[in-house]
Length: 251
Image (cartoon, rainbow, N blue to C red; front, side):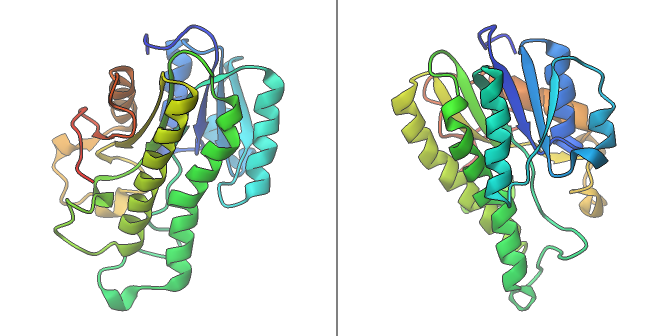
C-alpha cells in the first residue's frame, strides 16, 4: 500500500466478517493510514471486529439499505477531520435465510430482486454519494467496490443467478459513471470494480464443492491480492473492472 500519501483514512463498508473484516486487518497491519473506519449493520454483535485491539480502528454503524444510517456514519467521519484516501464498498448479498440464487425464470421473486439491488448496487452508490465530500481533494484517492465476474454481461455463458448477476452489473455501471464525475474533481481519484475470485467465506460456502483447491482463496490471500491490484492502479485505470490478478474483465 505504498502508493498512498501518508495522511488520511481508509473506510471499509461491510467489515464485520469475510473479506471486509480481512481488509480491516490488513489495512491496520500495513499502517499506511492514520485511521481505519470499519462499518457494519450491528457493531454490538460484530465480535471479530470488536476483538481487534488497535487505536487506529474506529467502528461505525452503517446499514446500506438505510440512507439515514449512511448519513449518520458520514457525520462521524467528517468530525474526525481526516480525508478518506481509500473507500472500500464490500457488503454483498447472494443468499441468506430469505432467498437463494435463482436457477430458472420461474424462481424470480420481486422482493428478492429488490433486496439484491438494495444491498449490491443502490447501497454502495449511496455510500459513495454520502462520503464523496470526505474524499481527499488532492493526491491519490481510490474508491473500490467489490463486484463479481458473474456481473459481467459479456462473460455470462451459464445463466441463472438473476438477481446477483443483474445487481452486480448495475453496480458496475454506477461506479463506472461515478468515475467520470470524480475525475473532474480530483484527477488522481480512481474508481474501480474488483472481482476477488472464489473466496472461502459464508457467501461462497454453499457453492465451493466443485471449486479446485487452488482456486478457492483464504480471506487473507484474497484481501492481499485485491490490495495489490489497488496499489498497482495507474493513469487510465479509473472506471475499470479488474480480477484479483489484475486482469481486466469485460463488461
